[in-house]
Image (cartoon, rainbow, N blue to C red; front, side, top):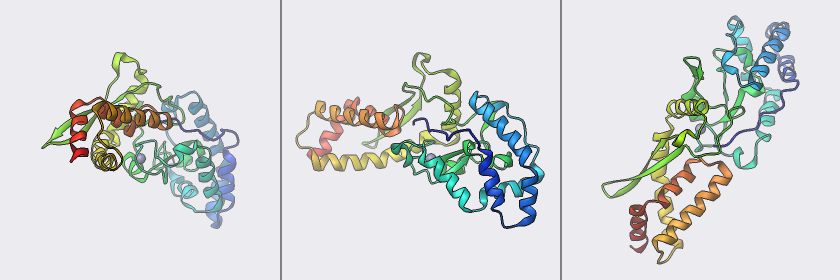
Length: 283
Ligand SMILES: [Zn+2]
């Protein structure tokens, strides 16, 4: 889990006018062109609140009556929209291009409308409202982005991802098979409570803790197979050190709270698991 780079907030309205000008349907094009000044004002308001991290104060949309036309700016698969998506993707660090930052599991093959397209159709093609994410996270988030006047989804452009660990794991054995359970913790309140509150809602909405547990079981099976092939006669210390090194490498690439890194850290510190692993390797 790491911050993503938003594309420059300069001239974002140009994407809108390019998309609209390329529309084949004259009535829709005329309707959307007539709205350009209004949409530019809305974009400016968004950019202002985005830049000062006050998106929660954005006013309700006045454009519900134009909903189908405005949404069509995102649905039309014209060249401009493809270029817009490409610009957003190309702006990301290489390691992060291939992993959804919402979950850290799947490939980010879709774009989430952070302010939902169904509620704010005027932001359907606003580049800084589009966040690369996987299909599963996009589907679970749906129209959700806030509750009780507090944001409930981490915004990877503007929320500073803390440089401290808040995702922790715990090894449990069920019928002799190891599993890892995850939880969010804020030891010594080191994580800013504003961020931690959003993170708790984010993980709940996207069902991430259960997802990490389920995915870890598969990952663990694969990991044990690899150890069996490549490691001979290891000690508990050898295995612990190897897991810890792998965890550190993953944390450098994908952040301290990347679930695969937390998984390896947790395993490296669990004596019951390390003994289990030695038994598996020596089988
Ligand atoms: Zn995802």
